[in-house]
Image (cartoon, rainbow, N blue to C red; front, top):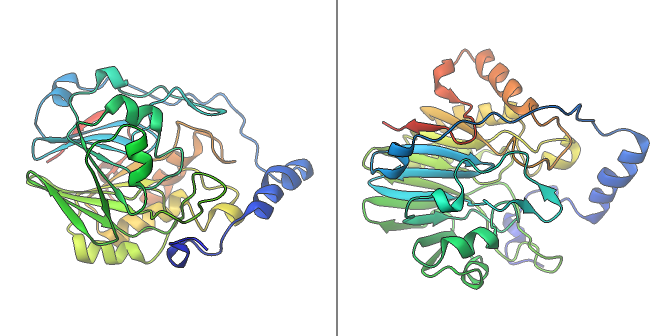
Length: 305
């Protein structure tokens, strides 16, 4: 049994489910087909904001953001490698490793390969503080991290003016076939002088969003995943669909919501460009202000305040 099986997503998906999805359903023609042709939009970052100390957020791609709060620069789930094994990038990073300013804090939400990337960690080096859930420190240190703080759910650490709290997520962990749920997973709430940011990591929809909002709110900027959701019978216990991400945003009581986990890697069956369309439709169906939902281009920078 894994150390954190009792906290893992349920119902559990295993090798038989993967075989059904990737082989049986594929042969039977039950899986959705991506028509192709979608190009993930991108723009140049605001170099002055990125280099400065003012509060800002830049989407680098997938679950990777550069966030500046309290004069400190944070990277979330940094994955800047050209590819992840056989999976290629559909959008180059909005900032290459060589273009990053000095990083103060790196947040790693869990050990799946599209969130914990040794190629990137080696290039970031030992200087930042690495914050991660329990059990992930050894992988980070082997990849070149220096100071690592491992947290359990609801535990916090500080760096300068920032308070960083690990919060629950409905997910699971595995880096090899032999370590399923041996390390914890979660999201991060970062409280700074300018406001509070929340990065969910990977998560399915669950009632924990309301608790996070109650215990850690008010949340000003919530980074939530809207992609990697089909087929639902396989993905529902581990990844939200866009409509569920909108529900999560309202449960959190977030002021602004930033979409992530789409447009970079083709991990599941839905068309690459579908998640933003469905997220916008669900957002408008709730009667929410369009300006509060940020569907950023890769590389796009927004001021926070």
